[in-house]
Image: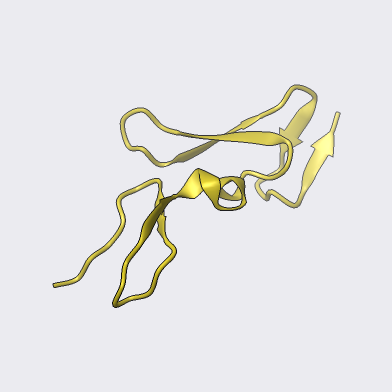
Length: 66
């Protein structure tokens, strides 16, 4: 049997001991320091919402203040 995590969750265990953790609790889901991590209502995939005055350039480490 192979266990995997659903969308929006990350395996923080191992291949043999799968531990599914909410992706938003791990480094803000990869959203970067000026965004809020949440989940898409239908797919539960990670969704990043930028704070006012910030533009997400596609990488959490490359955000520009406007």
